[in-house]
Length: 268
Image (tube, rainbow, N blue to C red; front, side, top):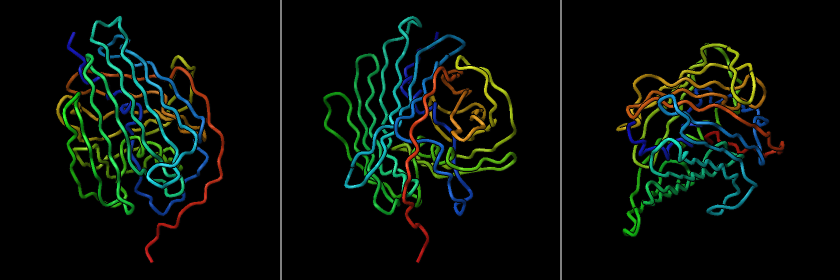
């Protein structure tokens, strides 16, 4: 079996959908809230490789702003014969602006640790990135971004808040900490999907990304979002250079509905 050295990205794979051409469309605001948790079984090359969990945490303050931490964790399964891998990715979601303020990544692969912090500027047109491997000194870099840029988790949750329409495409600029690209999602149709969590009516969404290296896509990914008000990712199929990965929902708990005062992002 090929070494799954990049398994730590699985938590991000759980959220690989894009958003949104319709900037003027008001998000529903009821798709998710603090306390929501989705659990996934992840299969690699046809074998169960591990688990991933995505949780919306309680409101907190980060960099002087009120945010909801969206925590994605992934853990490899010892039975697949690869070295132990754990990752924790936190995206800080500003519910008022429907944007992210930054993120923190902590990963451990074969007992080697690395960290990455991204802090976006207030206007969303720049980012400071801090990366560190093991005991090496941290490396800082500044990046100029397209206004409104999100990370993959933020793009996912922004899309979930939209009213999805079959035949419509949604896109949004995404920044990974080293690479910028436009993630594009097209709602192709409706389909019933059966997972360990049961059968659900879903929207089938084709997702185009521009990751490089081992995460370079051989074809567009397919993501299935529940056709209810939550639009929770139910199943994701991705064919990367490192191999085929499938994530399936095993359990879901909705969060609480929170009234959010939306910021006015229109130009004066």
